[in-house]
Length: 256
Image (spheres, one colour):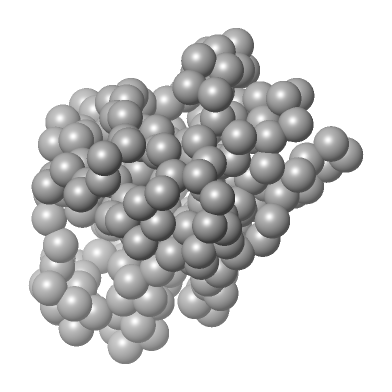
């Protein structure tokens, strides 16, 4: 076969690192697809398409029309819909697929986690008494805070929350990770935070807030991931590259 054609569904640091590694090897054709939810996405090392596909069937059509040999789901661990669409598209087309999913964070001594199933469940679990809440889930789902207006919220996101939340007590921070332990510690102290709402996204880029919460004795409402679709999964870029080498050894070695 010729040079393998690979479609990466991205939007994570792992997707970027994988794209960089494949671009450096220059033995396959890679297209990185981004959902377009971030207004100013980072520069990428391979060709990029931005926007959704219009559903699972449309993604399957895109894969077939483009002659792709491999689909890699390297989306955010909480992008459940696109992951489900990717699994469906791979199954219906017969195209090989893998998921690059970073491991979940694990509770360690000193953590004060309360496991919840959703952002809304986390907001409900805050209780009736006013609290200072660091809503560290991004702008997606931030509107759930409106269900409990008695709290004071600090909302951090890459892009502005639009429309702004219908709350009297809310502050916004626009920032993009990775974050440092010192910076997160100072942020929590500055805003007198006593509880954090976070998704169990895993990875190092945003883990500092969990470390800072542990040091300060702050409670964390940890939103669990939904069950992942049944697709061969790896948890590192190196493991993904090994799978690619296994799937396409002749083409990869010849560089044709």
